[in-house]
Image 1: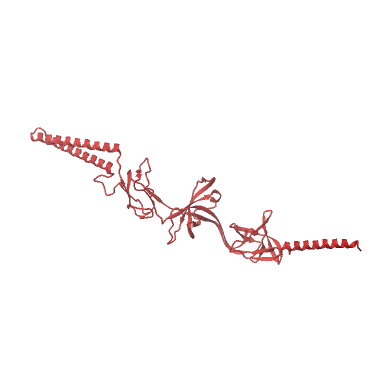
Image 2 (image 1 turned 135 degrees about the vertical axis):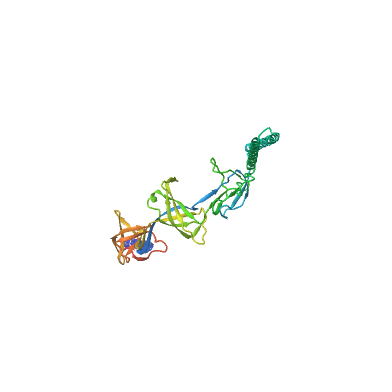
Length: 380
């Protein structure tokens, strides 16, 4: 009896320790996570591509001076409405030394010739009075004097133009006053009073004094990746979202797709242009950054399932459908259009089907799909 008492004590201690460990292990396991199921929905599925770009006026006109000089006065500021013929700036002529010297020399030469012709005419009149020459000879000297007077007036006009940019007998439209050539709005004035400006000619584009555009006719100008450009066509509708106007979405219509791509940041991009439909009371400024959603395909009110619920076996899609509480069966499905989040179900499921969430499906998006908790796992 004394021999078995220590052995019994050891067995009881071991049994107690084992019971304690089992109790702690069972408490740490927690309850099994229940499976979740989601239903199908009737949704509009839209497949689209996104083009990034900006809102710009359809036509921008750069106003340039017709003479070179120093900008003396500005009559407009950016944002001001303007009509064709309205004054934009006045230029003070700074004559070129060589041109000024040539013009003054021409005036001096014309003045000398004019004085000589006058003396010749006076001499001819005296000879005619004495009966030495005929009247026709006097008429020839009168004509010569008239020509020399015309040359003097022309040389003086040329000197005036070199000095001031406009002759004394010029029209009301002065070259020193820069005027708008179109109606619209002044969207940029890149010069300031005191700037030197260069006239527009065959060898120089000239200095831009102002940029005028019609802000009522705006377009979206953006870029589309080469992988998407083959899917779009002229005439497709666009939904245009402007970063600065978060609450507004503008309608657009694709008008142009560039026939040649350009390499931008290592990728080939094609330029697109789309007309933007204006909204009353919403002023769109030139240069706003924007994104345009080009609708490639659309399905209206079709049976749709969250794409994350799909599983694949050798490339064939299937889902696990609840057949009764806690039991699920495999169902092969036929898919249609996908927008990357939801996919159209063509065959294999009904509106009443409940699809089990795979472990890697993740939670549904907010605003979510119909879902509920199923019974604890392990009942399958």
